[in-house]
Amino acid sequence: MKKILITGALGQIGSELTATLRHIYGTDNVVATDIKRTVREVSESGPFEILDVTDGTTMLNIASQYQVDTIIHLAALLSAKAEEQPLLAWNLNMNGLINALEIAKERNCQFFTPSSIGAFGPATPKDMTPQDTLMRPTTMYGVNKVAGELLADYYFHKYGVDTRGLRFPGLISYVTPPGGGTTDYAVEIYHEALNCGKYTCYLNKGTYLDMMYMPDALQAIVDLMEADPAKLSHRNSFNVTAMSFDPEQVATEIKKHLPHFNISYKIDPIRQAIADSWPNSLDASIAKEEWGFKTHYDLASMTVDMLEKLNYNRPIAS
Ligand code: SER
Image (tube, rainbow, N blue to C red):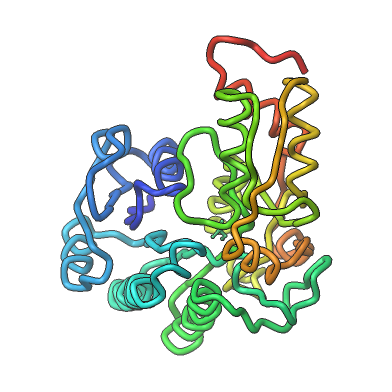
């Protein structure tokens, strides 16, 4: 039975992943940690500890106290926030990661941390971006993600730590809002469509980015962590994606259910520049080959589910 430590457990991925892992592996076997106690369902539904990931001593104490054998390291600043505060991003994203890797080495833990489409840069091939390709990101977040992928590979090759990772696209969920990412519009648009019937988008039409619905992202983490290590030639990190769209396409899909919905544009130059430096679409074939990556939701089925789940009172006809 796994005994799992999750950092950043109250964040966008963590608050749902904690519940999923508690369901699979047992509540007491999943220790959630975060810098503060904000999401009560997570912090009160099983073991929870306050942890600032830049404090390696406390992280080690918690890992030892609960005898963990798996670390899922999620605590990080997302792309737009990292661009506003690059030094904070470097400190949190890199020192947090190396603390977690050191503990994985000490305790011989299996290890997962997410990378991102943000690891790619403007010189990367934009369409069907291959698994192994040129990576010269121009954002602090991207620099952190590439360094993180290399660091996780280093701990595997040098110390034999079973490190694994996924390059996530924008993640869309009806449960927890993202915070400070470039792909956040793809979540906000559903909330605003239901609340106001209109949405002002900070990315321009024609800005294509990869996306994935949260249930598929959670399943991908579980499947990768359960994958036979003998089959993994790559480890940190696999390209994964479920769909690629621009704001107009989401708006068109929403209009099928809410015909009066209207999208307009007010471009945020910082987030637009970040999005323009990222791929239009990823090639996830290596993840499919090595550990059977699959998704269930496309834009149409995700839109039906998002609108249904967000709109408790009014069932949406599909
Ligand atoms: N969703 C993330 C962001 O926009 C990408 O990894 O920062």
